[in-house]
Image (tube, rainbow, N blue to C red; front, top):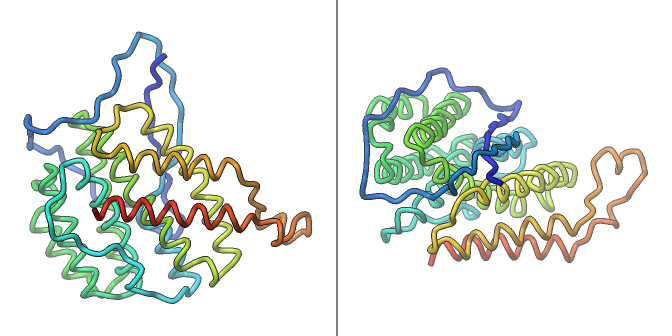
Length: 281
């Protein structure tokens, strides 16, 4: 039975919603293959899921005064990547763009913005990621909250374009990218700095991993991304093998910090590094 996916993107309470609606792109590219969704057998089942946006984790890190570190960001890759891998890479860059933006690293934010725009144009988003968006980015570069709106608009543009073009699977590849890079920020910046924030984000990422795997399973995964998909599945499986205490359980004494499986956390962190290294190859 085919399960048709209904994506509900849940925005963090620390971010602002987009103020402009997307316009329909006139771009078509018959030379690009989309992720294939198996044909329906006439029986449809809907499941509502939540997926992360690239602003959630950076905003939480900033609002909890976690120290900013440019060294944890995914480096800009100069060599050309394949069409599908570029989709994942753009998702990773969007996460790092958000991280630099909310921390007022204007120069780095501009570098990642330009890379996102370049990759977006290669993916068919050139008409939407137009010069006016660039002007607005430059005008608001010293205003993190305003940049957050622009980043979410870029996300919204891509999401709307992929739906309009019947390329929902490509949108999920973007999510795969910023999910992996978001996990990197969780381990590199939240862990060891703020236990409660770390546990909150880990619980959140656990649910997102399950939802992302469910969404990706509705499509045929491109051969070139089978390894990265397998890593995401392993992350989800590792989460499912863990019993993570909630903040409420810790505060009420129902459970304690010693119950957190450090070996499983190290396994998750290693999988995140494996994902990032796989994209960079």
